[in-house]
Image (tube, rainbow, N blue to C red; front, side, top):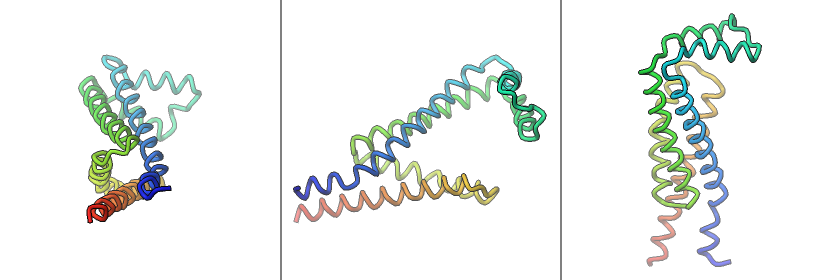
Length: 164
């Protein structure tokens, strides 16, 4: 196998995993964006209460009750903002995933910058309230950023060596 093919396929598996994860996140945010739009001009809390009733979930549960009281504060303006934010994140994640799938250098850099720029907020949320899920999300994002930095540096070092 030639050195070029060997270096080209070295990071393909990990890049594919990251790309698929970005596609999944993009799809989830796109669904949330459209879901928020579907609640325009509706009573969100009543709709969620109906779903809870259909699923036989106790609306008097402490956590469910807190959620329902927060949902009563959600109106058309907030739903539009939530939908726009979700669509923006979906576009970012789907762009990252597509670029990584096609092994584009710009996508590696975009993913490094976008993912690392949100990590301070993840640290803040983790310090505010520690949960295993938040810790795993932070560690996963840190692993993605560090891996992509390593990959970009390897490619840059390989390009410098091949010019000599």
